[in-house]
Image 1 (cartoon, rainbow, N blue to C red):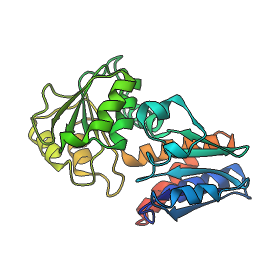
Image 2: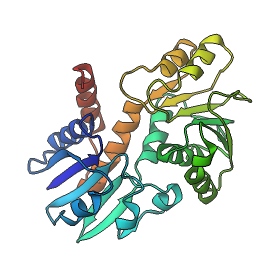
Image 3: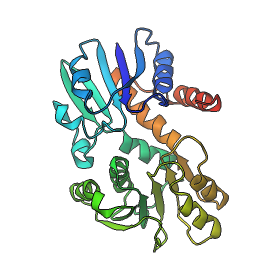
Image 4: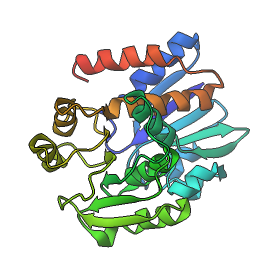
Length: 275
């Protein structure tokens, strides 16, 4: 059986390392997983070419929203978030899933002893597709509202629409502006380096979140994660998110429990080797 990760650019992806490690640990010798460069224009044709020997696809930017109109059906979470990062093929049909949300929840709970029923004020940095998944994740952790720090409020329409579908109010704030009250949970969906201003605030003691998730996994630790750790704040990173969303993809595509520790070891070894 075949599977792959699609995106543009895609050469940097760690997904092949994680999925191949899973196949090896599960004894799935006939399975393969590759990285395929694919943009929005090429997605319909690529999907059309996936026959019965394909188990599924992992999707990264810019395809998580572009794929929605090409699916036969999708789990409710996909519609709520407005993004799918997984396509599972079954009997010629394309089923959409979002494993980013449970991946985020697991990444956060791994570094905490468990958040309260309501983690308190939530601050999300960014307003794109990953921020929409973050919004669903914090709802799953018990948050009742959130603030999203965005550079351009005019481009936050998808986030606000997702908030409405998820039933969690979102207040927009300027990126880099004051974060009051201090967030119980800070989730950065910004690119590497973009959240350094918030890292400096943590170092100065003017920002004290209860927990931090930075979706960047390389380089690690990010300035934000390092500042949090130095301040004694639990910090989860993008590798944990990538690992747990990939584990769920493995389960969806193979029907077997994911060998998370084997996947973790392979991913960390690849990062240590400079992947």
